[in-house]
Length: 311
Image (cartoon, rainbow, N blue to C red; front, side, top):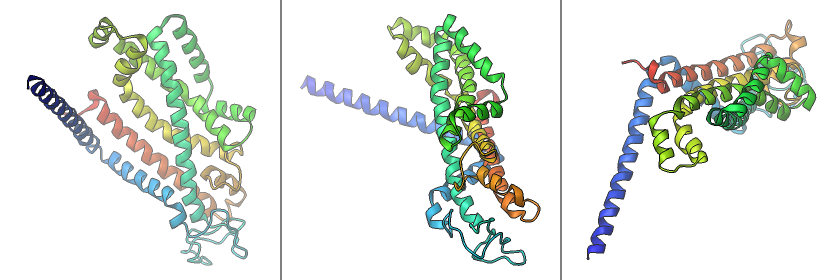
């Protein structure tokens, strides 16, 4: 009977602990959303970004034409509101008769994919390297930070261009190059945060309790360093899209006929003066996407950084 009562008490304690953890998480989420929605621009950016993601996911269903389908007799048609425009091609067509609206819709897929892959690579490698440098210090820290300083000494786009020239043109190599260029920002942020947290009482207590280096780094210190990294990841997402578009425009990123926005701009260069729509709409797509992500980043900074929270 005593054993049964003990089990019941342990189960009740476990249930109560789980409930408290869930309540604490809900409270943190509610606090985060409260501060995030104080920034109206961030909320608008979030709404626009969600719409762009939905468009990218539903591209095969909502695109009126295939992204590479060439329509004979429909070369350089203007948008529907101009003379000569047709409702079949709402935003007009390019020099080979491809529907610009459909290519923009499919291009959202490529841009978001680029942002996710680049940020994932940069965050993973940058956090690991920065964690090692900030925790062990000494020769490891010196070697890592001098390497990061060398990378940061070059203009990011120029360095990415050189790396792509070495690896070879293509979307995959462009993403690798952009991730390598962005990595030093995560290394420096992680290193600074680890150095600030390493001397705190909870880390000392965990070390006294017998926690090893790996547990201290990844279980104890790293979870308390995520706020600035999340903000940096949001801002790097937009930078990755811009850099990929720039490489595509220079012919070193995605290759035709891929409907990537930078590549679309590159293909339309010779028609700028007589067919404004082939350049304007991809540029607007890049502008709106990057602006929405940057506004979201500002909101994340306000919500995650206690020093910026308004009373």
